[in-house]
Image (cartoon, rainbow, N blue to C red; front, top):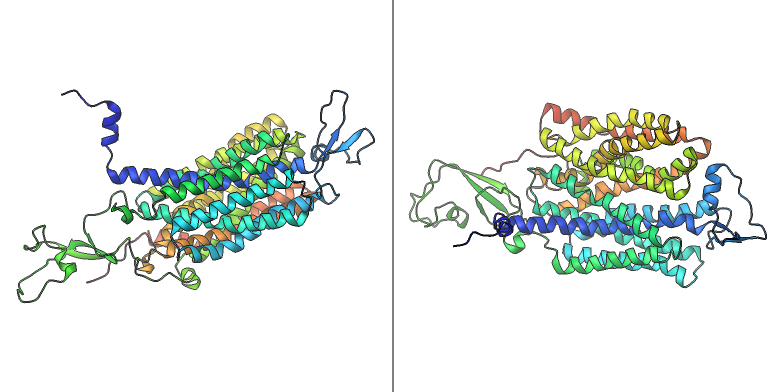
Length: 537
């Protein structure tokens, strides 16, 4: 008999459960990466919505007004030999406020909608709920771009489009985190979700590349193409997403203990079981504890009753009930300030680089993507450390503690010139935005949310995960909306004030974790409910 080819040996070396688990991991990664891909175009197209084109003899286009302002050249109205290339209504003197309103309308709608999304989502099938959100998000992302093709110059049109898009995008995060939490146990949840959470950076990078390809020639396609991608992924979601491993008779964790499950609890063998009373019929749950022949009792063991993964018969948790889960409020408020720092970098770093080093918008944007690359490694690092230490809050606290001085160093070195800025961006992209800012942000929104959504106090109620995830990320989204707003208000008085604000926010994020860190150090595993609560039977 001929030996099997290496590829076939590799395929059969993995079990059916492992292949399904890998498939769900990749699918949810791509689904949420497409959400982030559709959010990026607005930051790329801003420079095209307001700019002046100088009509040169060669027919070339001059610098945008944003670049002129950044380099210190005073803005002026176009002369007779110049053409106003701005897109109304963003051709007015208050264009910065108008462009900022597009960001705030999306982020505020996203923050408000996130609180409702988890409550709604846990009462609906995840596959249907996520599919609807992706199709709607694709439609409204493309609708923004259609304003170019149909020459729509109403500011209200663009704001309403952003608000609705922000609302429908809230269907994404609770759904994918709940699905991933259903498929993966707590054993290496930090590492698994740290790798998985890199979809944020991957989506941002792809969104920048796709939007940048058409921004100078036809900025409407910078929205239409990402919108079509999100809608297409919504169809893929409807066709292939499996909400729970029990739907196809798979185990719910990579190393699920052998036992018996009745839909509400699962049983391990721990206490000695006697069946001397022949007249008393065996309870179906006790029957499960017998050997395969159903006749002989199991000796020298015990019975442990654990929450099952199913829990489908339990009622969905309320909003106030989710807030009473230990750690939800603290991690939510911590994420508010952590996300404030992260999103301030996301929206203002290109302009900061332009002002400090007098680069044009395209070069500044390319340099700023280093932070997204660093964010990939930061999320993975946070997951690995938290898994090894088994202390989520302590891991976040350590990174936040190191983030403040690193922010100060970055603000100081970045003023020393282009070479120093590039070197510092490579370093701080992995440290500040990556390991020290994006790390805690990624850990809280993924592994911590999943831990709290399956907290021991819930007694196996799997419906709580979507609500807990929505509360935590919704609170963080409030900070995401406040950060760029505060940066816009403080930057005219000097960039140092912006960095002081970021360091203060970092300290506040750490402050809200003090109680949980103390609890973890004094009672390991208690902060996020890693200890298993056994129910006596």
